[in-house]
Every structure is written in C-alpha cells, then in structure tokens.
Amino acid sequence: MERETLTCIRCPRGCQVTVSLEGGEVVAVEGNCCPRGEAYARKEVTAPERVVTTTVPVDGSTDWAVVSVKTAGDVPKRLVESVVAELSGVRAEAPVHIGDVVLRDVCGTGVDVVATRDAI
Image (cartoon, rainbow, N blue to C red; front, side, top):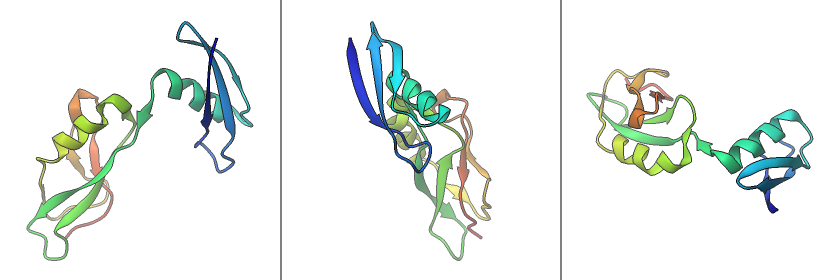
C-alpha cells in the first residue's frame, strides 16, 4: 500500500492528512479535522487542480500597464504551464473592471480568466 502525507490548505488548521492508495485508488484518508480536508486530500492525490494567477498587459490605460488576472476556477495542475503560456499572448483593452473576462475557456478547460482589479 502506498501512503502520501499532505498539508491540507482548505482551512487555517493546516492538518497533516495521510492518504492510503492501492492501485491508484484512495482507500483511506486520516488526520483531517473536517470533511473539506478529506475531499482536498482525495482530489490532490488523484486529480490535482490549481487556480492560476498572473498579469496581462493593458492597452489604453492611463493608470496601469498591467492588470492582475486569475482563473475563475480550478484547472488541472498538469495544464498550469499551458495556461500561463496562453495568457502570455493576451492583452486587455482599458477599461478593465474586476470580474471582466480577459480570456474565455483557457486551454479548453471551460474555465475563464478574469481580472482581479480595475484598470481604467
């Protein structure tokens, strides 16, 4: 049986969670203090995902040369570099407002990339 120990990031407690795997399948999760910890650990060892944050240039803004952006949801961890590469060719046009979609369906994930601040 394979065992992996993770630090849960779903709440401030930072539980040390141990996941037992057999044949790539989760058979046990121990050490979590809440249900979110178990769900996080199961997902992290089988299909890890991340939110990607970066910046993109803004054309036409008098205040900001770039605007911060993030994926509106999780994307597969294996695609993080591809998401960043796709965003490297994106430019936003001022005005940009918090929540504006800067790029739809990044890397075919179904997840949009949105602005996290205004750039007027």
